[in-house]
Length: 170
Image 1 (cartoon, rainbow, N blue to C red):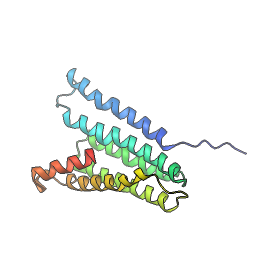
Image 2: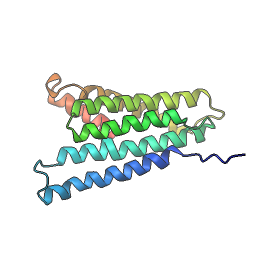
Image 3: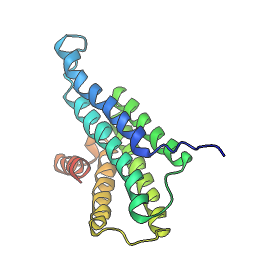
Image 4: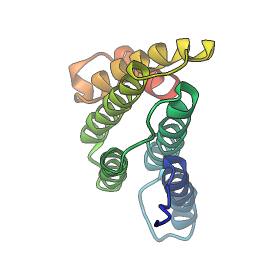
């Protein structure tokens, strides 16, 4: 009988988050050395929130939710989808495709909602009470991503700021 090595989602996503955090801080070093000319405030923010933080959110939820609900673990195709969306989003940050970046964030959030919903439906135990906050966080992130997926001229400055706060803090 062969031993199957089970790769947990957090292992892949946390490593990805670590790499992105180095890049997110690295843009400041590159700017200080004069290797990049554009002030990296926006790219740093996107790398840290949409890259680093999303990697840890994906890794944690895709690992913890199945265990907390005693449901099936992440399947290989789900890991591939989650990682693909994540790394395509990182590339969109580096290519300054801001609105595409938020559209990808929306896809990532919807994918996580799908992933968690499937586990919730097959659960063997009730989720912890803290799971009550997941739908609220997802609602904020979806609404904010929808706002930010459109050009800034679509909405007022206040609505755009609301969209950023919903994504970054929700």
